[in-house]
Length: 446
Image 1 (cartoon, rainbow, N blue to C red):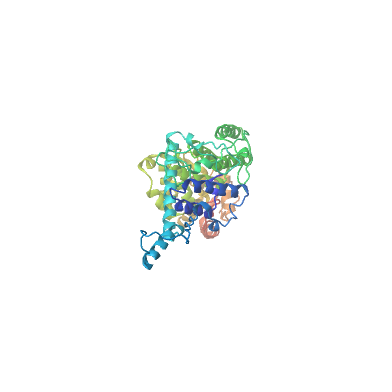
Image 2 (cartoon, rainbow, N blue to C red):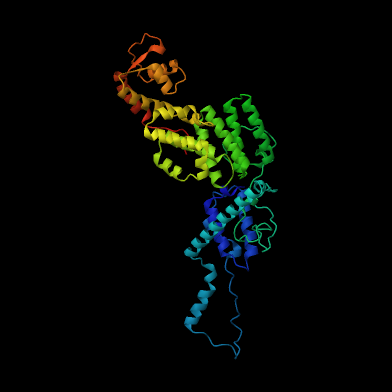
């Protein structure tokens, strides 16, 4: 069971119980804590239990000893304390049963800090061991908590030889990570509506074989819908098992390229968002390539503020990459209205940048035509075909027809001799730009 499936109230309650434990009742309280949560997990009541009202018996204040009032006081006993001293003694005796709200908030912050430090240490350990440490095996699948070996401090809450300085009050969530047992190479994607079961999840070794087979099927021109479903299922198995390493980055990069090639911008944007997070963790991949794609996507969305912020954070190594330099050149050409340079860059886009530019190149063609028709009286269709990077004269003519701007002075002539009448074409192009291209809608944007 992943820690993400713990209700927030349960986490707050666990932190509260850990803060109330003392050296005298820690062992008994931890055992009772595990038992209570395990019972709730088995009964499927983790989300329905009112955890604020649950009280561990081991944390209740011990009853004060009762003396026999019939016994006579010895002559050498201490005198009866005054009212003020008696009041203070009663206050001190009842102190363990109270819990200040400020103390609770401080303990919650302390627990969150230790959890963040644990995640950072785990990420560092992943990189040093090529991601193998993410495959921790949980042999118990029928209980929420398994029997954990005691650390040097004697706490059953994690911390071993690898983490001798782990805080005994912080749960080790890695012990509850699911590790799959399924040996099937292919599995259709289904959205999870219940807690995942190990027999339905493929382990790391099987996922590696699955990726090799999917790459082979893609080269054999397999259906993209089937490939996409398989990749989403593969990504889901990685997420459920909390596997974040070089292999995870490779899976998302390959799926992103396939989505670009197939025009599936929804899946591409999801992959790009996840890759951004993985790169920030320090996991190696094609960082420069997808940095260039991100710049082109921001140009497509005309998100100037985010684009300027993102470009300002580029490292010298990223700026030196050819793909990133190309994307920055596209940005400059678009900002300056240099459509001649823009379409030259479109024809020479490295990697798969042209697939992203395909989504906004028609908008830039309309903008270029608005400039041309305002500057010229007539212009040949052959010139427009070459200048605006159309594949052929027929494609250029059809583009003008689709945008209600095919105002030719000699419509009966062949395409290679046709001339565009700029005066009536300009208002049509302006209207089309306002109606179709002024507002940008990006599918799957995150």
